[in-house]
Structure formats: structure tokens, C-alpha cells
Length: 350
Ligand code: SAH
Image 1 (cartoon, rainbow, N blue to C red):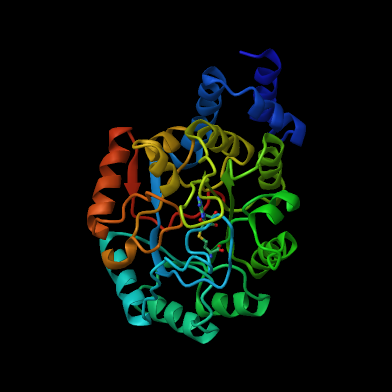
Image 2 (image 1 turned 180 degrees about the horizontal axis):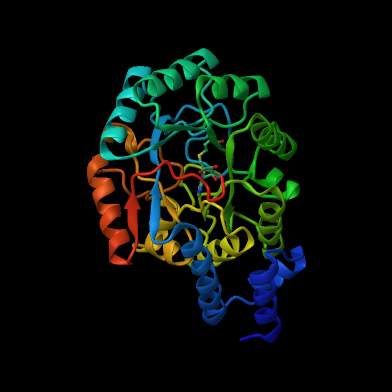
């Protein structure tokens, strides 16, 4: 093993902080030995804070209409071959009921930026879910909105918000997004969400087009400093109807290594083994957990719409009913010595 890389990993293990250049050095010197050691350190923190428990979040992808045109995303506005759908409030509430019955205590309502749902609509949905299930944590993932809107959702009962920062480098952000979207606004939204009191999930794509290891190192440094409660990462995967159709997908190895480093940077962080990770490798999510992740997010969307929420090609879990999805993930976790639990799944220390 590279001596300096080993020293840096040990330093990270005790100090939970490195300089951006040092993170880059680790990323540049990644090999199996270094990955194994990072995973070993990461699992130590995972065991300390979460044991062999894996938290579940039920994901309801309630609309694939989007006003945005992110260059990597399959549901971008300019993809006219995307069959659009939106779920009614009744259907969304039914998904939450089903999730609750299956043992979920966190539900994530995710969608494109679809402003046909007004703030009042979103608040009504949150209130209806909370009225029937007081102990179900409602998480939103509906993109960039004003601080006033975020405040209204919070008052209606939402307590968590997932908004990946996508990349901590403003220049790369500008290459991945159209001019009307700005890195500054993304950051402003994350700051606002934190100020309001949400548990916040940030996150980034691994090996997105033209991303280099310094960019990734910036993402690690960002997580070290911003300390989001959750950090969702997954490999970039191309979608054939986007400008990045021919860009190579991110790798399993880099994603797993990033997961281990994130666990070491912020031992208590909630770290999902994402669907994208399960898409690039049949055992991707299991490997993600073994690298330090502690959350999985099975799909609760009605099966009829699953395939239409295609952010990238070949997305897995688009066929099964929610219960099957959960059963499958439960078995997968048990096969590696972990256990899915019925629990709201707060970040350790909250
Ligand atoms: N509209 C919401 C939800 C976006 S979808 C929002 O803006 O937050 C959730 C995440 O999927 C995105 O944040 C992005 O990181 C990821 N994603 C989108 N396209 C992807 C692709 N082609 N490959 C991998 N991940 C992708």
C-alpha cells in the first residue's frame, strides 16, 4: 500500500478531517488494499452508531414532470420521449398507508420540479399523511423552492428534505446544468433548509461527466464542513435521451470508496446504499452496506409508474410490488449479516 495514502487514511480515522488535496491523494491512490482498510474503519463507526441495523425509507416517486433541464437526468424537460405522469393526492396518501403497514416509518416524496402541485397541495398531502400516521416521518425531495415554501412544508409536518448538492465545484455544476440553474441557489436552498430545522440530505453523483478526483475531493470536504444529516451518493449512469447519452457511467469501486471515506469523515451520517449503486452491480447495495452505508430506500411507487421515473437507463426495482421489494432487500441485507428495522431512522446523536 502507498505509505502516504495509508498515513492519510489513519489521520482521517482519528481526526475526521483532511485537506481537499489529501482527499484527492487518497482517491488517486485507491487500490483494493486501501479500499479494504477504509471499509474496515468505516464499519467500525457504522457498528458503533447503528450496529447491524439498516434503516429503510419508502420512496414514492410521485411525478416525473420537471421544469428543469439537468443535462444528466432522464426526466429533464427536453426529453420528449419521456411518458409523463403525476400521482393524485389520494394515491400518494395510499402509498404512505401501504408503506406504514409494511413497517416503514419514513416516507420520501420525490419528484421532478413540478409546480402543478402548489404549496397548499404539498402541505395538504403532508397533513393527511401525518393525520393518519403521527409517527411516520415525512421527507420531501422536490428540488429548489423558496425559503417561504420550505417553511410552509415544515409547518405542515415535513421534517426531512433531500436535496443533493450534485457537486461542490461551481464550475462543474455549470457543466452539468443549464444556465438558469445555479450552484449558489442550490447552496442557498441547503442553508435555508438547515436554518428552518429540517434534517437535511445532501449528496453527489460519483464520476459524473468531466468530474475529476479533485472535484470529488471537494465533495468530501463539503460534507466534512456542511455536515448534512444524510449524504446520498451514487454513480452517474447515462440515460439515452440526454446530452450525456454516451458518457461512461461511474464505477462501483470509486462509489464504494467514497462511501467508506464519508463514514470516516462523519461517523454518524446517514448513508444510503442507493438504487444507482444496485443498478451498476447486482450486489451493489450489499457492497455499499459493507463499505459503511446504513440506509436503503425501497420503492413504494405504484408499479404502473415505476418505469416512467427513469432518471438513468436500466434502473432496477421497476417491476415488483412494494412488499416484494422490501422482502427482497430484507433478504439481501440478511445475506450479509445486517437487518432491516422498523424505525424512523434518525441520524445518531439527534
Ligand atoms: N428534483 C429533485 C429530485 C431529483 S432526482 C431534486 O432536484 O432534488 C434525485 C437524484 O437523482 C438527483 O439529485 C441526482 O443526483 C440523481 N440522478 C439524476 N440523474 C442521474 C443519473 N443520470 N445518474 C445517476 N444519478 C442521477
